[in-house]
Amino acid sequence: MSSNLYIYLSIMKKIEENWECNSRKSNLNLALWTGAWVISMAIASFGPKFIWNENESISIIAILINLGFGIALILANRKHLNGLDELQRKIQLEAMGISLGVAVIFGLSYSMLDTTNLISYDAEISHLVILISLTYLGGIIIGNLRYR
Amino acid sequence: MKNRIKVLRAEKDLTQAELAKQLSVSRQTVNAIEKGKFDPSLPLAFKLSSLFGKSIEEIFQNEE
Image (cartoon, rainbow over all chains, first blue to last red; front, top):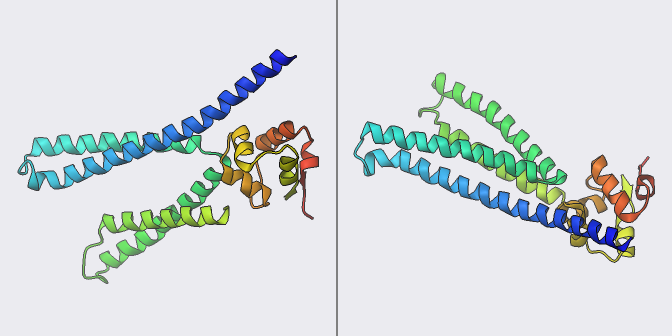
């Protein structure tokens, strides 16, 4: 009886440690791939002008590397989301839902403002990315405050 | 949904962090469930039930 209990407690302890350990690992993994993607994006953007003097082959390689890191980042994010507990997933889902809605609605309106020449400058994709990022960040903060 | 988790946790002399560890969730989740801000899934409710040795109905009460 006591040996069964000991085995049960050992298994439970392992599961608990694994969840925390996996959570930390997936956070670190996501942070590393995000960092790698951001750095490769900066290199692919500014490299042609400041590092390799508009060499087309190097630019293609840099963009392909950036794309590869981007795919790895998507997979790391998926793994990270799967490792979250149910409340954390709910917070993420609400934040992502809001940012997706904002991206579609405001993105199309912004594009129409450009095509109808109601704004003097070109609608840039970077403006939309900034809007999505801020909305997502806001959603995460509000979600965490709501369930604190 | 109301629940008795805070009382049952105190009876077992567990902190929120210790309970969270045993349930493989974050402390924030345990806190949100205790305060009735978040309703757990059925698997998590079963885990709580087995941990406290009580039926789900003894832990959770529907607010009418």
